[in-house]
Image 1 (cartoon, rainbow, N blue to C red):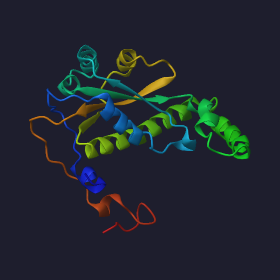
Image 2 (image 1 turned 120 degrees about the horizontal axis):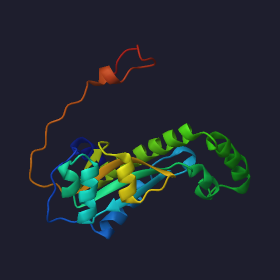
Image 3 (image 1 turned 180 degrees about the vertical axis):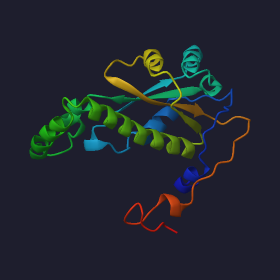
Image 4 (image 1 turned 30 degrees about the vertical axis):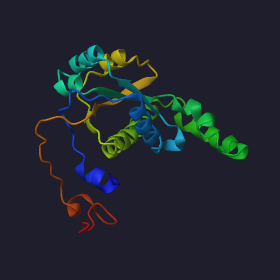
Length: 205
């Protein structure tokens, strides 16, 4: 599927084929694309826990206010953000010449160290960028997804085995679309959401 088709046809799907699975080979193809997502200073704050076990998905469903598609999807991705990703700065940028690293790593340390709010914001920002890549990449592979923020963070962290150094960003159900209605969707017009030069400037038309 072409990228433009994937973007235009992506929907948040809540019904999944009960006979379809998501195997390791498919996950590998998917996450090889997902990990190409951008992140601040290339710190790659994202971590992913893919949960396919039926009983564990039932636990996740309970932690998601009983939303049935969490239990119905063959896989649920817990997107997490690493709070201390700045500690990986040298390794994350190991492709750079040493003189660049000698300058870059201290800048990263000064930006993140001791700034818990910034660490959390960046973990969520990078995790969100990767989540959107995941949903578009899944669509190109013939899979459907639904992003979710309706869950109990502490419970999801417990179920997914996240430690205090990681924050849950969102859940994404993943699988082959099943029978069931797909609700129509609408978007605000471009001239309303895209302004030229200033927020009170002319809209793009």
